[in-house]
Image: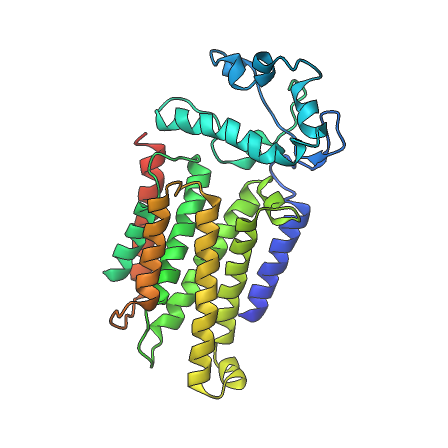
Length: 122
Length: 198
């Protein structure tokens, strides 16, 4: 039994380090969005969010901090870059969860790979 | 009966309005069944053959491993949570799996006798390791904060675990088929409530 568990543990380490080589795209952590921070890719479609208030995400419309594309600030500004994951998970997931709880089409609420895919049109 | 009720009670604490998609809900339902099995195993078991506590322990370990590999194999981005920089609750989950594996290996004959000639000494160490494993598993669930976002849900789960671990409950034994049947029904309910009823 201990050898079977050791083999499983090894398989788990391989899966964590290399990812599953079959059947699905493998996202990678890399410098993206014009910054040096190594982050996962993100997919987002404006068209599927049609009807939502723009300022729900685009705080720069309200606080008049117009500048580079939104993600560039979030990966280069030392005040917010460390919060990138928390802020975006909270922002996207909370809205998706509210929609899901209301029984409306919600988009992903939990599955990591549903959002962390390359999206050239971000 | 107690085991079946415990599995249902643990799963029922999770917020039914929170759905993560069928894939995610299924994987986490398995995790809740594993946690319920672990909590049940904390109730002192009578000694002697045919060692139902030991047999159930292997199944709890198997269900726990299924929970872990389900996500690693089915979601290519989940692995980043077990790489450096991953959140604390995932490291605690990994610690719980490793402790559970250690509990099973170290309690297995004849290795157990080689390591612990004294049953009393073995039982004490086994109990302490199990408490550490339970604490890590509970923190893994509570800190991930998805299915149990409210304080009362977490408190309910911790209370259940404490009652089973330290309450003066009669020593319990449970058959593996009861665990698998109650667990299977709970997984089905957990997923259907979120994916179909909504």
